[in-house]
Amino acid sequence: MSGCPNSPSIVLECLRHDSEEHYFLVPRCKSWSCPHCGPINSRNLGRLASEAIQSFIEEFGVLLPKQRYNSKSVTLTCPGEGWRGLHPPAEAARLHAKARKRLLDWLRKHYDLEEYFWVQEERDGFPHTHLLILGTGIAGKGIMKAINDKWECLGMGRSEVRLVKSLRGFCFYMSKYMSKAESKVAHDGAHLWGMSKKLRSRVHEQKKISSLEFEVVRVFRRNSEGTRGRVIWEQGETRSIAECLVDANLEALCDFFQDRQNGKGEQLLLWDDSF
Image 1 (tube, rainbow, N blue to C red):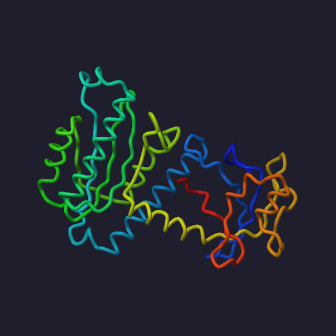
Image 2: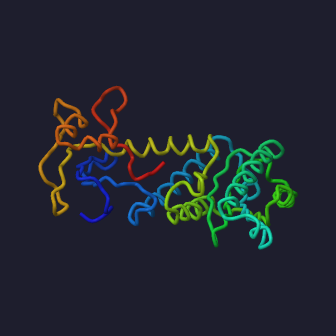
């Protein structure tokens, strides 16, 4: 079983409810720096974010009938060589993050910004941000100039504002940058990506829906060849998965599981995501 080089030493037999098929899965380390898990995290976050945005659109209809104008992509940069010569990368990242927060607060106050999703990328050690903004208030013709002027007033460099042709495509475009970073944080703990609280809650809701597709049937210890070994737990066992993992000296893996609602068995967490 090839896959994550840091995956724990268990194999799961799972039942997928929508097809009644059995799958054998190996939990992942879920690290953004992992060559196997990083791209998976990126794809899954792109999918979850696009589904969350779509649910927001359907609930509030904020992109109808003017879908083209109520979503914008924004690129935010640092000033040029003179400014960069006075501000080392760590300080530049801090100032960039502070200006980005002030810009988002300003958009919420003056342009009824509803949701946002941003990813920070570095080039030559200096940050720039890819930002998706949603809301009826950003449809006006003057929004592009307003953002440009505000970003400059905040002491930053150029900004570029464009219409979004495909929200789903743009979410995947944004999420691919995440797998390039070694972790979710950069200089001095500054986050490399973020989203509005409402959008994050929608992403987590989509994550819960996805996790209900799978149910654990058996847990195996993985042998040295990477294949299934002896059974650690199976349905019908009077003890919980966590108790059996502890007995097998695998208590560190208990976080991969949680009780299903109403106490009906145990449910596999959606590990193909990373938050």
